[in-house]
Length: 153
Image (cartoon, rainbow, N blue to C red; front, top):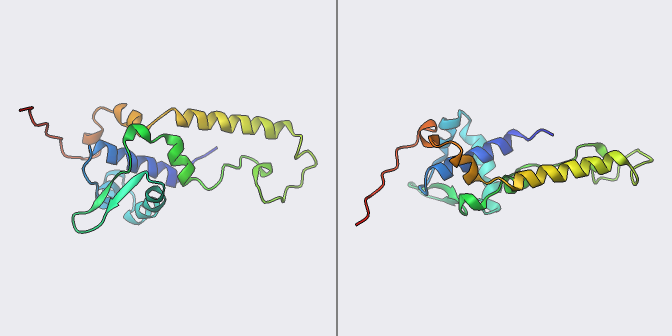
């Protein structure tokens, strides 16, 4: 199974927002960090926003931020929103146009469904927060400004 570029960059966009520590992130900055077109990121932004994975703030000082905490967004959440199909073989398609006499009793179909379920289970076990914490210097790698921590009063 191969995930689309849309899923890849959706995860990257969410990681950027998580690494930006609650600040609004701007699409041009995210695009520059990853070397991808702004138009492509805007296309990805729509389904992420609709699913509540990000929130957008309009206006001159607007941007995008996570729609919920990074530790509450799993990779499965992202894949479910950004991938069109998980058909690993023609018998997975729901269009009814399958030309196989074994469609209802095939061992391959069963094995592939089990494999896909295991794949989804693994994705559900990882969050955006896990990915960001795995790279302690992710902010620097993405060109984000250093976060200034104010001393407690």
